[in-house]
Length: 55
Image (cartoon, rainbow, N blue to C red; front, side, top):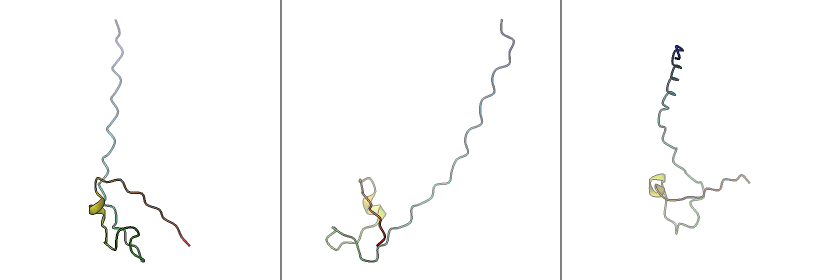
């Protein structure tokens, strides 16, 4: 027979607010897009590789 009290359940983690990613705006335009502008909405559901560098 075990008279020990059950262990308390931990409180759930607080939910974080969803934050939209800022739009990516390049000074020289997009490369390899045929001159078309892109938005994050255009890339939704697709794999995108972003390469950032400073020269």
